[in-house]
Length: 312
Image (cartoon, rainbow, N blue to C red; front, side, top):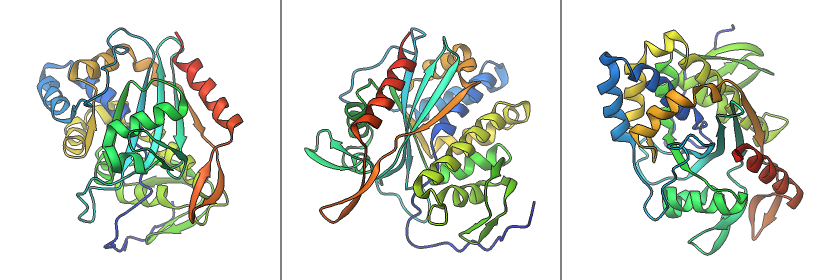
């Protein structure tokens, strides 16, 4: 692989368009694998207790407990680096459906500029704003209504957590479609190995991509798959301490420790096949703001797909 620049200049402005959060859910599976060993069990459970945070005002789902298919809203927050410690926005949003019968997980990327109702706010705005207004609850309520599905859980991670997770598994390898430069790094075409800083830059680029934000989402999904594959290897399991440290300060979920352990025990095969989809919209200017407006037929396509994946 060609040498990439290592002079990434830190900016005062916040990083945006950060990487996807599914890594955290896959890494929970990794932790549960190690968690059944006496040596690691208490470390894992301690971290699970620290990151578990229920959502007030939402009914608790029992799907994981009863072994049914379940859905997760995955949120990548634009906080945790460059001094940002405010609430922030969910610059990355995905819905993951996990079906143990079909042994399949489906990822749906939702562009941050997707125009939808802010449930509880009484406005129609960009999807990323829901978290800023009402954190996990409003984000879940808004996406749930937009996609007409029941969201069982959420997982969120900030940018520092993403970088730390990539480093914790020893970096990831992806196949880059074309050479580009981003934030002081040069990413050649072909197979590239990325550390945390590089992975964050790699997944943020969109202006040089002929597919714009949708191309960026494909790179995000590729990195997620790479993290999951690396984490579930023997070498990934041996790095559980680093993964725990990355998760403790930078990740939140409403999954209880018992649910996390059950996912690792009963749902692991569901992560062997990951299908990736993107909710496509059309760029429109409304009241001076740029939105992605999803056509009815596209929304119906994704809603049907999610309904099929969550069926028993």
